[in-house]
Amino acid sequence: MKYPIIFALAALLFAADATAKRPQILPEPMLVNLFALTEASAALQICMDSNAYSGLPANQKSLLNRLQGNINSLVQKIARKYDEDLFPFFEQSRNEAAKRPERIKTMQEQFAYCGNGMLERMKRYVFDSRQKLDYFLSQQPNAR
Image 1 (cartoon, rainbow, N blue to C red):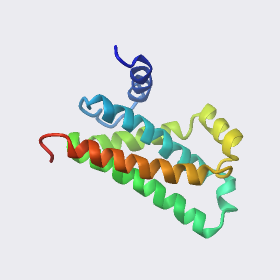
Image 2 (cartoon, one colour; image 1 turned 90 degrees about the vertical axis):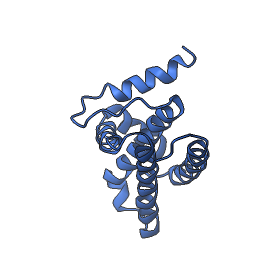
Image 3 (tube, one colour; image 1 turned 30 degrees about the vertical axis):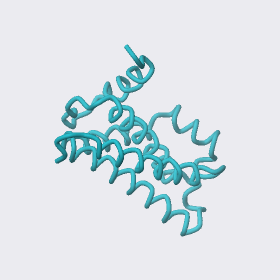
């Protein structure tokens, strides 16, 4: 295999006990992108579910909500292209990832849930992801 770690990570994502219909096979770049978007969305969810969130200024709360919405929009764009069942699967996977104790602990240690530059990193990540996704999808045949 060309990227064994990528496939192992993707396998973990898709091994979740999901009641939503599993999506069709996605091209490797989309599978990797879906996994990364799920993890980023879970990090935002952990922040928003934490006590630290209540202490954030209104503009930062608004930014967190916009970032979460932007990630949702990116996944919906992938779903429109490849499989409409992808978005419910993504949501369930994100919600499960946001409840994993090791993920919560990592967010606490690295970002104090919502701080230490997490918002800036997420802004850059979402912007870069949108640019890459738009380019990738523009290169694909049979756009829906």
